[in-house]
Length: 387
Image (cartoon, rainbow, N blue to C red; front, side):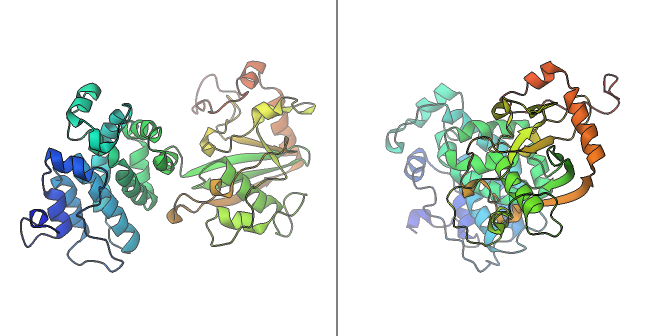
């Protein structure tokens, strides 16, 4: 550490001193491509001088958005390495409070075609995106650090995730930012998700149906692996007839430390939204009615005006659909999914559900061709709700 980088007060921890130090324009230019320069490394052994209250106060003291982004990354390291460091949620709350403004600044800057950092004109850039020069490009270049810290904090707290998802500006800014900073896509996926969802899974050919409770499931691909493992695994009796699936796939989807010797995953099932079922069986255009594996499972559509529960139809696969193992792993060790078979439907109940699907109006069925989102559910008590 050079004399100019020395803490302004000997009692301050070097991290707090560095974060609280105002940065000049030349220093921002120098630090932007090397944002961790001048910061001490976070060691596995907790530092008694860095308690959660001190780090939370440092967020408020950071004079630059860029400094706050640097601290966000370090705070994420503390949360990962030091068990119990932020049990009261002080650091997470401070990070979330500042995250919307930081992300919005970075999202605005991301709309501009960036040149190499050494030739960036921060003031000129700010004039074009309508923000003060200081939190512009430095916030964008520090967005990786902000995203990593925020991801770690959100992964550890369902309550914090609920708060973050309720901040429309933050969710929108992260979505825009991911168009430029692809490494932040896991954060976008985490925000565009739900903690818990009840699903109705129907297998018309076998006249079997299941009410499934899904928790922390990241996307459709992870749901496919967990469903196959639960319905076609080695349990006795097995809920469905069919080939035994590789138990390692389900284990990887649950976040267990299992080696998977496959570069491409497939399923003995085809996974379709409800509109793929007709009186004569699966529709000829069922390939246009797949459950999208890349999307969060709350996008699976329910049967309109009847029940808000998303419906998945199981049938024969369409063509040779496959996906990489990376699509089924949990986004974070604290986000391991769980799938619970709540209830098995008998053949009569399955027939009743299929009859309801058969009776769905054609416009509603047609709207789900290549659909990537589910229509909003009809609220209870709606006068137009079907009996």
